[in-house]
Length: 327
Image 1: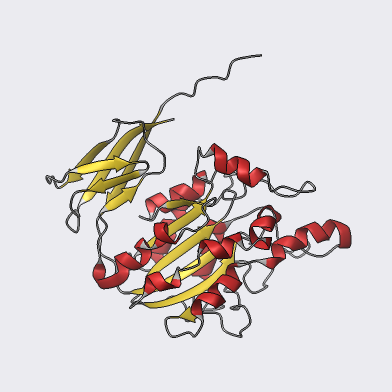
Image 2: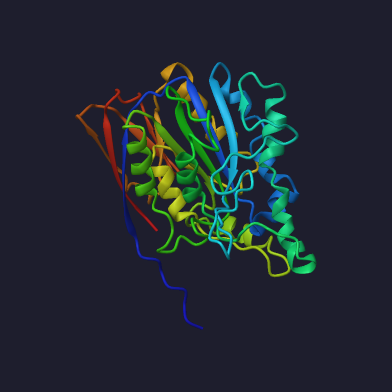
């Protein structure tokens, strides 16, 4: 047999800018409800990943809403499927007639966990057996975010507040348009659209809970959940890029709980806290990382796996350019 080829080293370039966020947050969860996530939802893995998340938002004026990665159109008419939670619209919070959870909502965590647990992912297995309708296999969370913003004064009225930061949290075991192909919605164009809509006055951060590109063990774990020809998995390359360019970061969907990695959402909002570390898209080769600050400043730093941790927080307005090698 042919020997396994040695991967070629690649060079990564990432830029960050130090900002302090405000204390009001509008947080949108965009959850994959396709059949590839069937077992993740059936076993309540997605809900359990976020157990404890609400407690990280203490003393913050927040609103939380949920939508899905399904942005399908009706085959005959070309009209969007306007079910709540599809096509960039807010879903109803499970067991209520409300579409938002706030810092004043009773049992906020229970309601959030129930709502991000998408039982319709299991309908896809029934569809071939009983013709039960199911969500699409073409996950489009970035497209859903753009549609959500487009509908901010219509179906999603009241969610995006003028003086609040916008946070999106994507949860998917696949990439934009399933495999990140050439027709996938562009992260850069989506960010530019959001910036333009709010005249560059709104802070927008995206966090992606995905299969981290290159994480073979997580890929194997997600593929093992396929059953009866359903399911699949892809590196979240485009979704990782979306997190990177919006000053968020990516977290492995194979973690039992992601709250520690996402508590930075609350930390950065609380009293305008600034960041003291950044997370790279890829794991760098040891001793390959180069960091430059603009304007120049003497700040030490160290690397721990994908994190670059600064000895002190860079001043507001500092631009940070990082170059590294990865496989």
